[in-house]
Length: 115
Image (cartoon, rainbow, N blue to C red; front, side):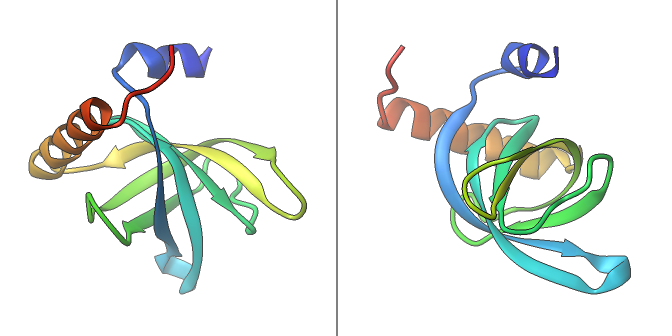
């Protein structure tokens, strides 16, 4: 299962981060929120339906302040007129991946999680 594979790739941090989602070919731009994030991907909540298999540019509007390309791997209805989707990072340079890994580790140790 995809969620199991993601969990094996490292810690998933529950952290709300405002994000701008952009489809550059169609000049479409809208806002969403990252609900959790890891070094391999994230869960995004948006009032826009993001079709599975579609790639977008995601710009984080606060720490870790990254702009990454991601592919939507799954989509589910969330609350009212919103959706949540799983995004796999498909284009990220080593420097950004290192910054993200440091951010996830620092936040994980700073904010205790229940097990």
